[in-house]
Amino acid sequence: MTVFLRRFSAGLVAASALLGAMMPAAEAIPLLNGFGGPSGYGPAMNCVHPNDDGSWAGGPNATGAAMAIPITTAFPNGINFYGGNYRTMFVNTNGNITFRGGLGTFTPMPFPIAEQPMIAPWWADVDTRGGSPPTNNNICFYVEPNRVVVTWNMVGYFASHHNLLNDFQLILTSSNTCSNNGNFDVEFRYNRCQWTTGDASGGMGGTGGTPAQVGFDAGNRRNFVALPMSRMASILDVCRQTNVPGGQPGLWRFQIVGDGDILGCTGAGQPCTVPGQRGLCGQGVQVCEGMGTVCRQINQPGPRRCNGYDNDCDGTVDEDDSLCTRNQVCDRGACVDRCMGELGCLTGRTCTDRGTCIETACINVMCPEGQRCSGGQCTGVCDGFSCPTSRVCRGGRCVDPCAGVTCGEREICENDPATNLGRCVPACQCRPCGPGQSCQPDGRCVSDPCVGVVCDTGQSCNEGRCVDSCIAGPDQILCPSGEVCERGECVPGQRPDAGTPRVDSGTNDASVSADTGIATDRGVRVDVGQRVDVGQPGNDVGIFGSANERSGCSCDVVGVTAARSRMGLLGLAFGAVLVRRRRRKMA
Image (cartoon, rainbow, N blue to C red):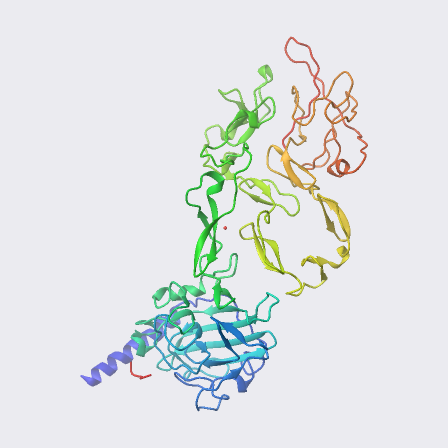
């Protein structure tokens, strides 16, 4: 029977090795290297000897008791972890670092546990006696000013198995809060995740039993954070997921502040629905609070607009015709022209029973809230146009991402491209600026040519010159339909049409007197009967000149016209411009 069991076990290990060779590596974010030594993860003296359940004891050939590793080179005042200040650490083979002594426990216990503060990127039964160290299956650390890096390089599992490998890293950095109270940031990086469990933890072939645990524990039985998939087979997903909005799979970041509060919980940055809110006000994003996430509202009630959304959050999508200019109707989230009697509609548009001109391809297309029809397809309300400089599109509106965001001392608000939400980040006095940039007193980094350049409202500095934020490229359209760009903001109005002007009885921008050639509400003189010069598509150019001209003290209008037409039996002339514009071992 004993011989049979041995052969059966050997067969399972061989089958596991074959399966491991066939399994594709769950490779994710690269690990940091270049720290010297045979593997590039630290000098040889900083590497742990090949072992099972051991700790760093003074070098690759030292096999004695665990030795404390000073970290004051990186953190002169030590680190503040849940209220405890630590100036040394212990690097343990089994995927963790501890602060009160080495830890040889191979089967991860559920957090919290007593008397052993630890940070565990992969607490499981690592065994580095197989493979071919020191180039792989080894553990090394590197300490430098402001940073500690510990790497478990292509490590196997108990007992001396090397058919499946895990490749991961722990990085501690001084916190970007400009404080000396021991705050620090933690980063877990996972490049390869293939096994979860050692043989003595109930596993077989690298899986089953009690899988790895990932997280933090204060050792006081009160304060701890464990990733939700800890001690489950799905722990392999740390290679495929991230808690960093827009981050690469395998990247996990946490900030430890105050008395050890941990920021960086899982799920942050994901869209959510705000309970009890309607319309745009129901849109939210998951943000970290304590050890979990809460859904934070990102939109406040705004003016009613014809854009396919419930902008004022009253529970009804805004479809009032008064939201559009004269001779237009709000239809399915867009202001469309009324049919002009015998003139009908322009090519590609059809007159509906409501008497409105819409795209022929969109006649029978109904889009959900937050989308509109274009070319017969439902598209996002932020598609098809751009926002002015420093503005982002949320819910079909160009908004300031930092509006309403309050940051702490020595912090500034920046837009997070992944969510288009304003986020607080350390000011440049607390973090270095990039190449070619300089830190300004307001905490922001600016390009060197723009240092000292102060621009007016609605302008931004580009290569040392103030440029109107409303300037658009030749193929770019600024602002959503029914809005124009003025002084860097999208405001209600109509863009000049680059196509054939149609006759209108007036617009919201101005009414032009055919007799006098005077725009009655802005006082700009135009010459009746000339061709309309619309300039580049998307630019705010029309009878009031360019956006740059409007922001100055005087304007010279050149080549501006008022079109003429006769309508019905009244025979009246009107000037108009068409406007559109997310085991065996014992502890």
